[in-house]
Image 1 (tube, rainbow, N blue to C red):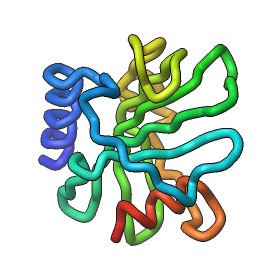
Image 2 (image 1 turned 120 degrees about the vertical axis):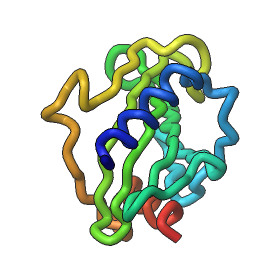
Image 3 (image 1 turned 60 degrees about the horizontal axis):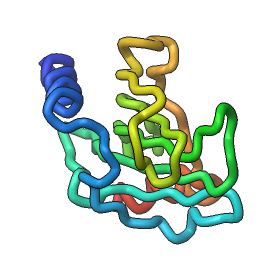
Image 4 (image 1 turned 180 degrees about the vertical axis):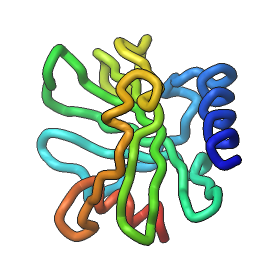
Amino acid sequence: MIKKIFFFIVFYLLTFSPVISATFNWTLVPETRNASSQVFYDKKTVFSSGKYLYFWQLANHLEDLDDDIYSTITHNMVNCDTDELRVIVYSDFKSPMGRGKPDLEMIVPEKIRDSFIWRYFDRNNTIQGTVLDKICK
């Protein structure tokens, strides 16, 4: 049953709400700003289902990454009890702040099943852990 709800949510988000940066209200996680990147999340899209939280995140790269990717937008699933996250939807952009058309879009469990795994992030020692700390409060 949870799988059906999960895939319905992902289907709905991709079908009726295309990943366009302007449709989000990004909030900077100040502790994540460094010389090479900034991380934002959209407070209004944080919601829970069972023991998991879901949210949209923007990583804005102030320096060029591989293949001219300057920003990524992801929809994430979080287990706050274990500080683990997995990416559900991934989009990258060749412009800052998720502007323009996505260069690559995918539903991770459909395209790269092996990448749809839980990843642990230490809240005190990683940028993503700092984001989790904000989301899980």
